[in-house]
Image (cartoon, rainbow, N blue to C red; front, side, top):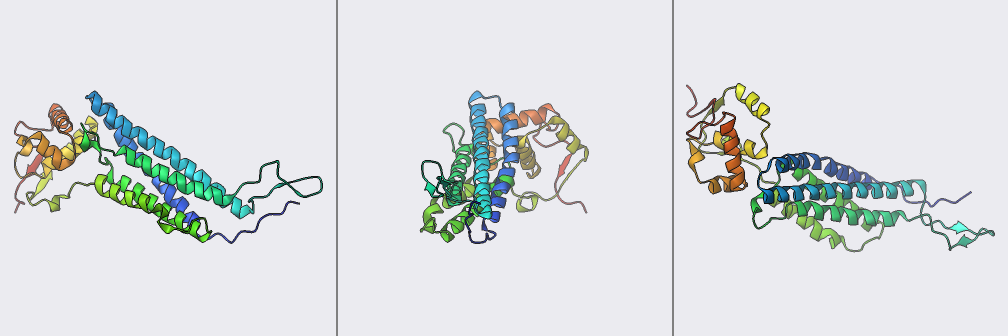
Length: 286
């Protein structure tokens, strides 16, 4: 009977890394969904091309994460079963080198870390600013993207610790550039709009409950939602501000704001003075 290799008992390091990779993979969905809808609704060809490139980068990142999880599973399973570097035997029972060995779980682990770093680069590619549309390089679903980036950091830290424990690397700083990139990417692309309480110009906002139904039936996208929120938080009719100023505040492009305002006007949610229909913005009632 073949002799299995005895490995030290597995701790929770690989399980933690696996859970983090799965979390990152799952949370790519909302962002991909938002970008797909935005790309399908874009009218400017160059902007549509940019958004679709971003979408494809997330597709590539998800595929890479799937491969990383498969490699990590193989490493874990091989160690658990005692499979590692066994050789075929000749007629006398001695090692027979012309055939392949049974595989090395440590090599699978190192490959896992390499593919996670590739996945990080592919997520980063999605938010690489372009000259014409630099404002598009931001997350549409910032909370989901933040979860992706934090989970990738958790996975890399876990894999690094496991590799050091197995003497696969002597330098814990090997993954430092990738970890730093993840932190910088999160700070750059995961911007969120302030809450109503954060905006000094907003005193009291109420709106008709039918507004929600109008928004849902119109099938608005993320840009329209951001513009609606911005309008809700203005004390006066602020739509008259230059489009580029509104776009800068919302991390959008001017044509995105223009298209959003036109759509809101077309579906009857925007008055001529730039305020939202069914919305009251002013002092709190007594």
